[in-house]
Amino acid sequence: MLAVETQDLGRSYEPDGKGEPVRALNGVNLQIEVGTVQGLLGPNGAGKTTLTKILSTALLPSEGSARILGHDVVRETAKVRSRIGVVLGGDRGLYRRLSARHNLEYWAALYHVHPEESKRRIPELLERVGLTEQADRRVDTFSRGMKQRLHLARGLIADASVLLLDEPTIGMDPVAAREFRELIKELRRAGKSILLTTHDMEEAEAVCDSVALIDKGRLLAIETPERLARLVATIERIDFTSRDDSLLGRVRALEGIVAVSTLQAEREYRIELAHEAALPHVLGFLVGAGVTSIRTSRPSLAEVYLHVIGNRGLKV
Amino acid sequence: MTSRLIQSARVFRQGLRVGWTDFWLFWTWRTWIAAWLLRTVCSAMVWVLLGRMLGNPQTMSYLLIGNAVIAGPSAACWTIAVSCWDRWDGTYSLQVIAPSGIAASNAGRSFVWPLNGIVTSWVVFAILGVGFDLPFPPRALLLTPGLVILICLSSYSYSLFVGGFVGLAPRLRLMINFGSTNVLMALAGVSVPVSFWPRWVGALSQVLPVTHGLQAVRLAFANGSLSEIAACASQEILVGLMWLALSIAAVDRLAAIGRRDGSIDFVG
Image (cartoon, rainbow over all chains, first blue to last red; front, side, top):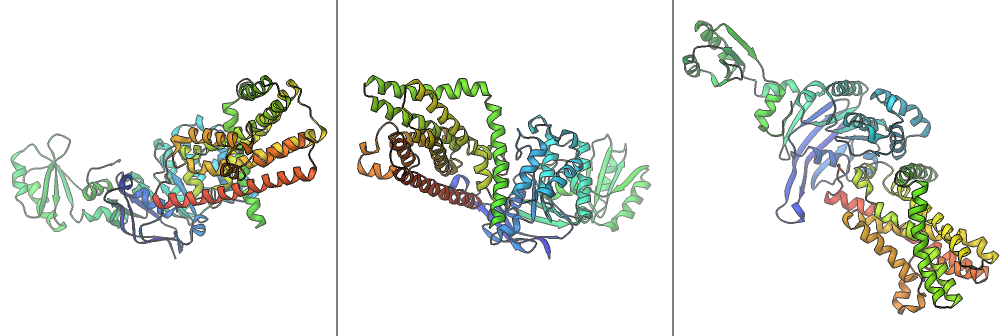
């Protein structure tokens, strides 16, 4: 059984209730295996939150279907709700005047966690997200990162099998974000299935088994982070330094060259190859031309993202 | 069924803690007495003084009982204005997608307002009753506190229903709040007898909270029979249950509409 499965999932809306319908989500087919972490990368307005809302039963799809652990989000809403935990980004979604502990007690009741179980689980969760010492402080005295960690604890309160995390590290400092990633890995080891929407490449690369790129409501690619990087890296890249300006023209004329660009550092250049086979003769040419500083590399996920989606809403 | 009721009671209690905390961060005992209570007493007293100026003790008693009672529902109606707070806090969407649903937590969060109304009405009754020598027959002394609780609870059910719709137009929340309170003040026999109104308005008042409960209070002060009082109280209970059922249906229906039209937002 799949943790999450969508088939031709779509959602349209009419801006301001009139005019031509806008497709926020269009023909999305996504499958998440049980016990895996699926990243969903895309710029603002790409459809990430719309997909999360449909899966979390906050929004009905206009077309297609979505299932959580085999249960249809439209027809079996109650079953879906008892199997998911949702974590939202930002500092909303908490009762600011209550303490962290009271917030968790509140949500434990809404998720039908037995009182005895919640007495055991709440201190454990607070410990896990590093808020034990702040447990009885009012949430409106928390930093944004602390609120975000409390959000995460809130999403875990029901010990749900499927977690939908919508930009969960927004506002976290780098240390907290790193700890969060460790927590995700821990949850994965515990058999949880996770959909993580983000526009943080580093995060997706660090924790996801698979990454889906989404833009304008469409899934553009679903691959492992490494394979996704290889989508545009069937070609190798060569970075080199040269003081000879005329060299660039000669490099461009070589066979198997896609592009030659200037990097940020002075006199540093990047060659993108059309195929791996071009590598030996281009390297041979550079060495023959007296270039001594040469290195080859593959693009990071961030560069893949830029390649596929373009430079919109990117955070690395 | 029993376990669902226990779960709902637990959710309600948690919601009440949120509402209680909100309430006491806004008010302190001093500000509650000096601002809230004093204003309510003065507002009711204006009507009682009008009654005294008319020189008719019966009219004065009528206005005193009506305005002391309505102090409770007026407070309970604040439920309407606070109904959109969960949307502002960004917690509404999370409540909707929680297994318990939204009705019990929503009711719990605003329940502090009918509680405030009950205490307010009791105090206004005591102050104005003593201040204007209102005769308290034993039956009235015994039954009025309970009837006030009943009236505040039925008004609360009515407010929950109206408050459900405030989420669709949060900017109008105060207007809807005061408008709904004014409907009760005008039509439920507070200062003007129900019989004053045209027949169709009188019919409308029969399905409003306060009307029958207030009638029961007036009967208690007039040494009416217990069966008459019980009949009026029963009608008030029925009206309250009707509004409660409507409010639960409306809250769920509005959540379903929000799910369809996309108005359930993940941000506040």
